[in-house]
Amino acid sequence: MLQSAAVFFARDFLSLEFPKMKAAFADLSRVYIVMNPAEAENIRVQDPEGEVILIGAAPVSSGALALDDADAINRDRFLRLATAEEIAATRRSIAAVCDHVLARYRPIFYLDEPVSGYANEMFSRSFGEAGALCLHFQIAWLPGYCFFVSDAAQAIPVRLDMLSGSEDAVRRHVELRAAGLARPTYVIAYGKVLPRIRDIFVTLGKAVYRKLFRRNAAYIDREVGPHLFHARSLWKSLFGRYSPDPVAHAADTRYVVFPLHYEPEALLAYFSRFYRQEEIASQILDSLPPGFKLVLKEHPSQPGALQLPKWADLRASKRVVILRGDYQAARLMQLRPAVVSLGSTFSLEAALAGCPVAVIGGVHFQDAPGVTRIDRPGDWPRILDAPTASAEDLTKWYADFLDRYCFGGNIMRGKTRIDDLPHLAEALRARLQAN
Image 1 (spheres, rainbow, N blue to C red):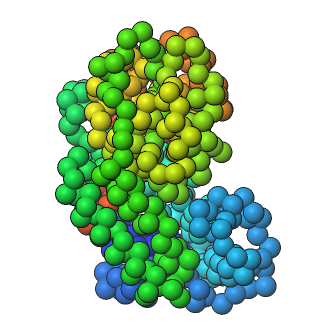
Image 2 (image 1 turned 135 degrees about the vertical axis):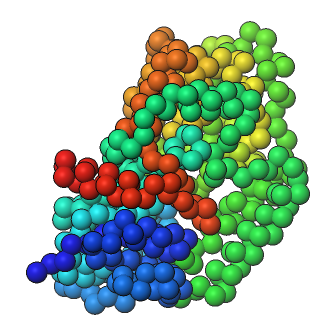
Image 3 (image 1 turned 90 degrees about the vertical axis):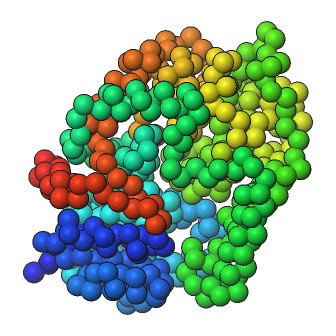
């Protein structure tokens, strides 16, 4: 008879954080999937009763290559560039883990970070089809709150009904954001030069370590591209030229803002079929009405990204304004711009300021007042005639979202906490029964 289980993909820092949730799943077998022996050891120390499955160690079944996974391979930012042999080996190892789990357990819950690659897309698909409630954690707009989704983007949040009366908390957060405070917990402060110089060396050091000591590791663990990209961006930020302040030179110009996401961000391929940000920006530029300029604003955690070669053509356009990541979002709102985004929370702040907003990605606030979901970047001009939302309507909408779907806590490296773990466990079981 199959044992009922909670299955965790405990990659990277989650090998330290997920075992802290074991009390919520004490009545179930706990199965942890990891990428390397160090992660396996983290699990065994904190949850010795859980089973640990190391990717690449499980026996490969004859059905390992019978997966309908071409799209999943092409969405993976690393795997789509790999050799045929590397792709085949990865497919076999992931299928072997799925076979191993499903031969021994009946997955009740599957917990994971946001879907960001082939491995957790296939795990989520396989265990979800077997009946598991898939729980990919996400960080809410308000610091100190999280929610789960069961899809690869944020379009299907998992209802928990754990909170109530959140309007005051949202109103306070709106005030803080207008003052440039209460930034998301994942944002890195790069306004000063010294932190950027420090992180250039730290990030390059991580790349060298992976190159020298992880050359035989799983493809995710040995990839150095993201580290090199970030280090190049920080270096470029020290010398790159940016546009004059558009607020000081607005004249009769109207603006549409495209805020960048951190790159290379694996999540982008799951939010939308448009995920190469320079291509999105080019389509917006190509559809600019007369009298408009396009503002490209770097992510606060990645100054210098717009100075990289792939943005050269857009930088050369006289209809494009280039802003560094630490330019204050609240100042931009003085221009009353239109905003087009894959799903940046900049969009929410723009909607609160009465700006027309379009999102291309399947984000959790795509149905909020004043936010319009569009199919293609070039469709953005239609939001110019769309009704904008009042700050009160949007505040009430987000407060309702908190009440229905969020829980107090944070899931981050070294900062994980769940404010009421027993209540969360009850809410998850209630949702499972409702489904």
